[in-house]
Length: 167
Image (cartoon, rainbow, N blue to C red; front, side, top):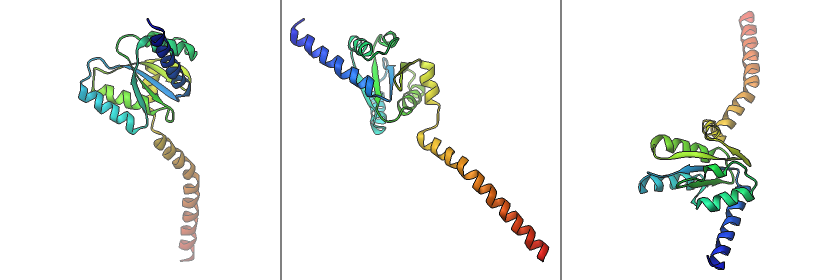
């Protein structure tokens, strides 16, 4: 192997290591058996959610994971591997990949990283089942509004009862 080739691979490892460190979450999948149309559809869904999907050689992924201090992730880098990196939303890559895997049985989630911690397939699927950020904010708003709503109902009930007494 030439020095130029070695330098190029070392640079690829550095880039992927930086992506691992910067990402809020990473999902690793086996895409073997997907049609071109399915892969195009998946990439579009990920791109719309501001998630980057790359097909990277397993050797480079293993070295990058090792350099990033992600012990135990090297085991998932076997066979055709695609990696989805999200720097913003922790839940989105897991949710999109999990939903897509339900439709396209050929897509298999192998593992990933959630906020810097190596995660199993089960943890990725559990994360995918969480409501979206907007859904969680809606639930929080509903919980915060409940006491005010209850006070308003109580005041209205007292007001109605006072009106009945006067009448």
